Length: 363
Image (cartoon, rainbow, N blue to C red; front, side, top):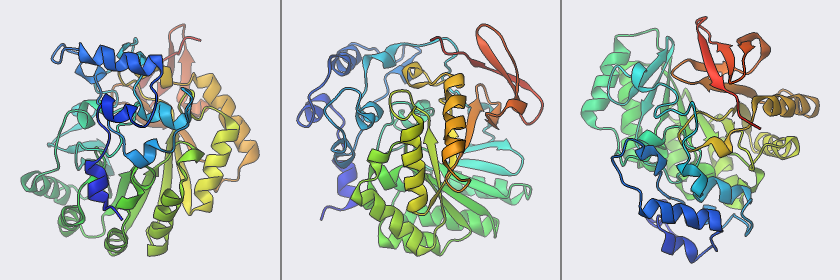
C-alpha cells in the first residue's frame, strides 16, 4: 500500500498527466492554452492558480463537464475572468497579520498559516495568493515568534491551524508546532482545518490520530463539499479520527454547479453527521479572483437554507455565513446583519458595527 507521502508526491500537476485519466472538455482545454501564454508578474498572478489534484480524488469524478468533483479540481477558462469586486486578498488577511504566518482578526482567536501547500488546489480557493505561491512550511523562528505573541496576549483563547493544508506537514513537525504553542499557552483550544480526509484520506494514519488525540483540547475541521467525496477511504479516515477521540466539525463552500441544491446538501450534511462530523459552516463564496462562476447569488443561498431548515435537525444543519470582503470578518447570513442593498451590492454590518459591501451576482 502506497504511503500518503508517496501519494502526495504523485499528485497530478500537468496537462499530460491529467489527460491520461480524463478527456478534457473544450472549456478545460482552453485553460491550459491560456495558461501557456500567461505571463507571470503582470499584477494578476492569482488568476494562474496551478493545477494540483491527487489521483484518488480525481478518480471519483465522472465523465461529464458538470460532474461536481471535476468542477472542484480541474481548471476552466472561466478562471481567467476577473470580475468586479474580486480581491487579491479577499479576507483581508494581510491587514490583520502582526507577524509572518499569523492572522489576528478577532480578539479571542488567531489563525496560523502552517504551510502554503495543499494536496488539492480547489478551484474556488479564497487564499490562492498564498497556497498557489509555492510557500513552504512554517519555520522554527516564525513558530517561536508566534508563541511569544500568544504568551503576551491571554485574550486569545483559540488558534486555528490552516494554510494551505496543515496536514501536508509530517507528524513530527506538526506535533512540534502544536507543542510549542501549548507550552506558551497551556489549555489553548486548537482547530486543525484540513481537506485531507476527502482529498488524500491515506494521510489520516493511526499515528496521526493518536498524536492529535493526545493534544486535546483540539478540534478537527474537515472540508467536504459533495456526497461523492464520501469514498470508502474518506469514510475510513473520518472513522479513524472519531474513534481516536478527536471531535470533528465540517465546513462546506456553497458552489454553483457543485452543491447549490437543497437535496444534494441534505445528503451531504446527513452523511457528515452519520460519520461523526457536525456540519459547522456553509460558506458563501469569497471574492477571490477568477471564481465568479462558482458564486451562488445570495437569494438562492437563502432559498436553499430555508429548504434545509425544513428537512434537517440542528445536529445536521450548519450556519450559513460569509467572510465579508476586505477584512470585515465572518458573519452569519441572517437578516439582522443585512442592512440594505442597492443595484450592485448587498450591505452588511459586521460584529463591530462597520458596514461592508458584498457584490450582487448578475443573473
